[in-house]
Amino acid sequence: AVHISAALDGAFTITAPVVAANSTGSVSVTAEIVDPNGKSAWKGSSSLPGGEVNAKLSGQIHDPALWSPTFPNLYELRVSLGSGDSARCRFGFRSFAAHDGKFFLNGQPTYLRGALDQDFFPETIYTPPSLDALRDEMRKAKALGLNLLRCHIKVPDPRYLEAADETGMLVWY
Image (cartoon, rainbow, N blue to C red; front, side):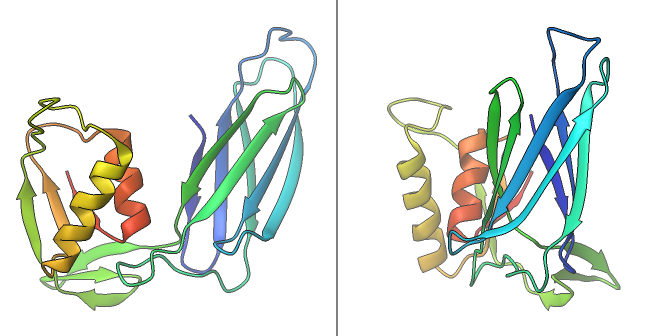
């Protein structure tokens, strides 16, 4: 899977695994980051020597729109290989830290108001029925004044994290 590390100042590093049938020739890799308004914010490319397994690109977005529970700004990363293979992922520029007995989101003190999410669904047991059902669950939690859901016993379904990013919900697992 494609991975992006994004810092508050807009600096980022992209790591994209490459599996090439021809391990002796180079592979071209292009990437684009689209901002929360749908506009291209950055483009880059690289030529990966044969035999390499990870393409790395880095750059900077000037004054990025930060992700927060109030403003869940998401960017989209689009990565393509010369072979035609491609991948997309959404991400937010944010930081989370704990020090001096406090939690900090994007450098600001944050009071966590959370609940334990047992992640049990009547029709599907432990499998979320749909992305829309997860979004609805998180919107209802936010309406109750929560900003965090703690996943219980197991790693959440990737759609759970997608819904959390979209709705502005913090997740603890």
